[in-house]
Image (cartoon, rainbow over all chains, first blue to last red; front, side):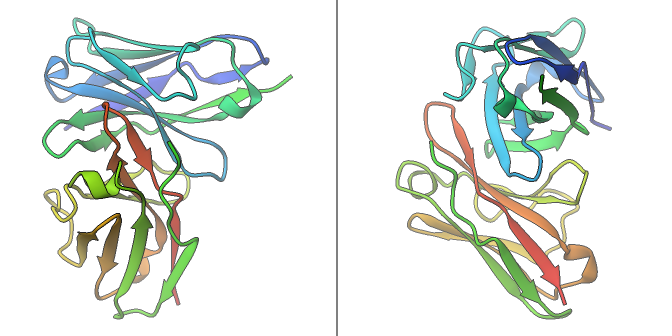
Length: 119
Length: 110
């Protein structure tokens, strides 16, 4: 079955950097767009980025553009989120999700990983 | 991109039907038939319940149904059950490969 497992979260100071990983299994990773979505504590969901199957085209929400970089390694079935210049407001649970272009649906999600930005 | 507007909470008794609204704009909900709904239990990842306004993924109960009119979409849960108590989020395609989520609705089963 489809499995997505995030890793790399933790506590970082404002202005710092962190790299999240998402290991995928149970499907042909290179056939799918992948997505990062986050959820601040007690708040709603926020879409932050999509990356094309090939990794050549990436879309970002305005809130993270220029600070966050998404990439993927199809040979390793892995998705990455490089977060730079982190702010307190970036504190959230970060989810990776598979995106099926049929219906533009986020049909499988990881369990999420907590990133805390605090001094 | 502003979040789609949902009521903070909706309540119902077991067996009843409830409807959750999701209001956006012509640039998102009204412009595309690409509205999804997600169910989320505390501390858990969201789960896709509805996509393309009214389609259910395999394994999702037919008690869940979706619709859209103009710039608003709705999720209806029929035959409300205790296990339906959760947070629900709508999500819409917003053009230029961007997506926007709703503010979220807590469903309480009385």
